[in-house]
Amino acid sequence: MNKIVLASGNKGKLKEFSEILAQFGIEVLPQSQFNVEEVPETGTTFVENAIIKARHAAQVTGLAAIADDSGLEVDLLGGAPGIYSARYGGENAKDSDNYNKLLDALKESPEPRSARFQCILVYMRHSDDPTPIICQAAWEGSIGFAPKGGNGHGYDPIFIPEGHQCSAAELSSDEKNALSHRGKAMQLLLSEMKSKGILG
Image (cartoon, rainbow, N blue to C red):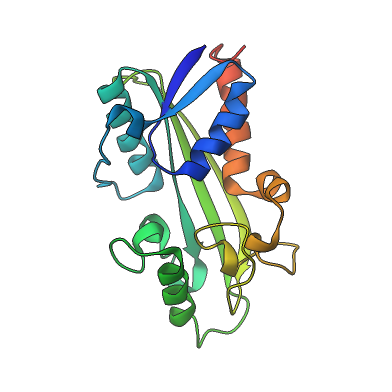
């Protein structure tokens, strides 16, 4: 079985990637299994940060690596929190700290409060890969007025997907995977990996 390191310690992401890639005979291992430390995300874009993470994990482990960088863009806030989504409420912020700060920033704002989740996935064959596979997908929606639902993480409780009346945290896991930015980016990545002969 081929092995790929996931440049993340996020258990939810690990489960998602493992389930999808297992059918192709690929085992996805978390970088924590190799004592790979988190690398500072010094990029100014999702693409740069995903490349930084993938390259670091590939360098330390000697394996091919997948990294994702994702976040929420709110139009009324000029695209914020963007690349700072995970730490919008401060260093070591909990999900609720982040989305409560965002709701506070929008409290005087009328509708529509348009927003989207962005996901960039990067696959690197090795740390010096000159042509990493880069896939990008977005999930359009708007920001609600209060958190709702318990099935999700991050900003899911306040994100209302386009065409829905409920929050992303009120969708089932299957519904969310079919619609979400990460689900769509994963499908793009799989088709790129197939076309390059990485996946059978």
